[in-house]
Image 1 (cartoon, rainbow, N blue to C red):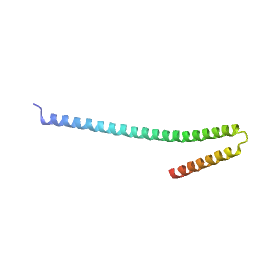
Image 2 (cartoon, one colour):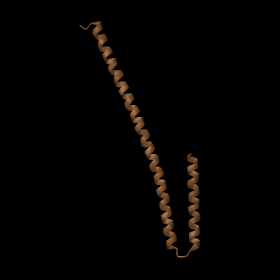
Image 3 (cartoon, rainbow, N blue to C red):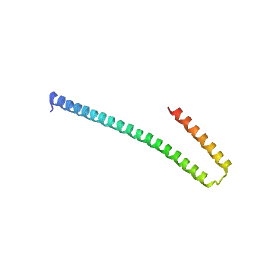
Image 4 (spheres, rainbow, N blue to C red):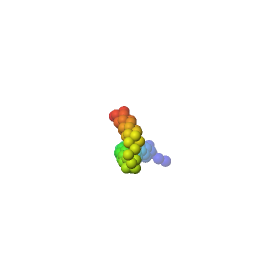
Length: 98
């Protein structure tokens, strides 16, 4: 039969083991949270890069439109006005994000 001290030692050992596992889990959780934050930052940077590339794409399309219009100034003016409206919308969205 087990003595009281043996049982108590077993319980103490199990408690210490559980505490160690708990601390290891806390460290792992902290690491995962830090990694998650890094991923969120990468996502934000990539979203910003996408916006920049989309704007560059619009500019290139405008340049191509201007190159192919051959003097149709009304069409060019309408396109420029549309781009200005798009830029204003983008600025409004950026100011709302801040």
